[in-house]
Amino acid sequence: MAEKGKKQVPLRLSNQLYEQLAAWAEDDFRSVNGQIEYLLTECVRQRKKNGKYVSDEIDKPLDIDIS
Image 1 (cartoon, rainbow, N blue to C red):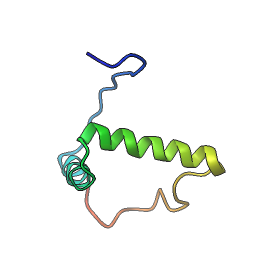
Image 2: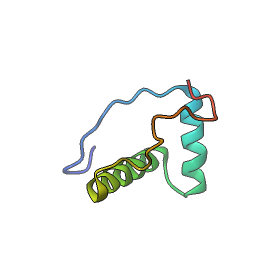
Image 3: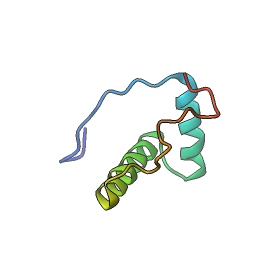
Image 4: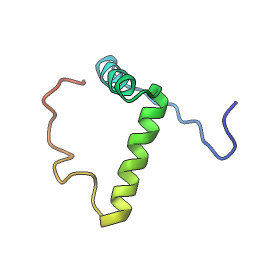
């Protein structure tokens, strides 16, 4: 059952992106869900702080293939 105040959001990810997130989550001792929530929270926090996303280069293609 979802925690009070939290919303469940279905999310579709490519296998490659999921594997990258899973490895990152493991490095940070988090679940994949916890890692995604952490990353989204940090992006929102940064945007509130300076009105910008985490990086001015956020839309540039990545060096890894996550499609």
